Amino acid sequence: MENVINKYETIFVIDTGVGEEATASLVTKFKDLIAANGTVDNVDEWGKRRLAYEIDHKREGYYTLIEFSSQAEFIAELERIYGITDGIIRSIVIRKEQ
Image (cartoon, rainbow, N blue to C red; front, side, top):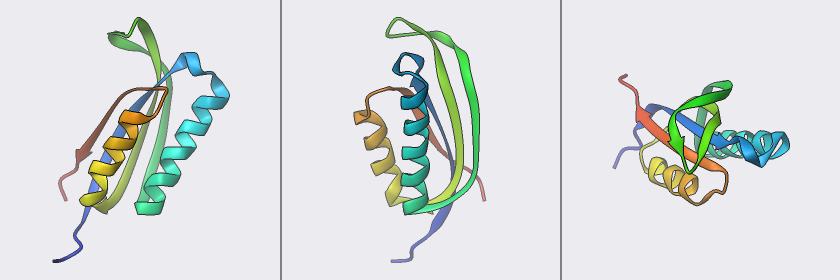
């Protein structure tokens, strides 16, 4: 089976209640995780923004967009880690057209 590399982008929202230091370490954690399993093309920290709707009684979050290339198998693992990481309110991974 071929190792097909696809392009993706992921956006994750961090609970602003965790503090600046924890926010920075979460961004670094996911940047490093993605870099270890693929190639990071771009990181865009949008910063603190108001949520479109309240999530768990929270009105704002810290948004980060990462564009990257990796094998498809990694995406399920990335989503699993988002799901079990304290401080991540929401996340999405989208496959980009080549």
